[in-house]
Amino acid sequence: MISLRIARRYAKALLAIGKEDGQAETYKEELAGFVTLLDEQPTLDQALSNPLYDADGRKKVLQTVVERSGVSRVMKSFLLLLFEKGRMQYLRDIYALYEKLTDELANIVRADLVSATEVSEETIERIRSALAKKTGKDVKMDVSVDPALIGGAVTKIGDLVLDGSVRTQLRGLKESLQRSEVI
Image (cartoon, rainbow, N blue to C red):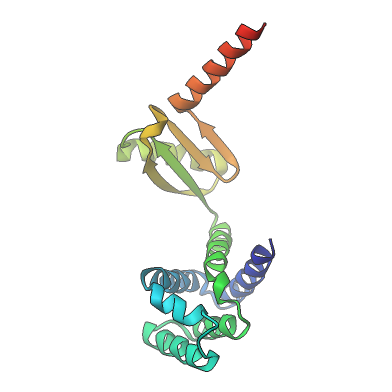
């Protein structure tokens, strides 16, 4: 819980700067790029976050990476501030919250569509349009396949879950039959 509070504080601070200078989307892209870099280079992530290494050496590594990455002056300062405050381990959480905050600012909502089989682009677009109409926001869809659903699909948008999977329907039928046997 503490990590979410810390991440929220830094994400909101960066968003305030982004709103002020009109670069909120740029900062989101730069933050995403840095998080991706750390995910792709676990040795770099380890070099930056491992307290067994000298703090000055780790800071120099961070400064070098940030300089070479070509991020904005604000992002350089932000990443160095995270390092100096010992908050680099929260970077992924900060990015996730920052992405959510910038989406809200841009009137965008994210939805997950999980289906039992591949879904055509036309169907995805129809679902996206229906969700956009229902929410009044632009909808970004993340689509995946899960054969365990047997058939149908599950859509999650925020806290709302629309479950039209055969697996859930079978589970409901099973529970209904079990209740009938008890009576």
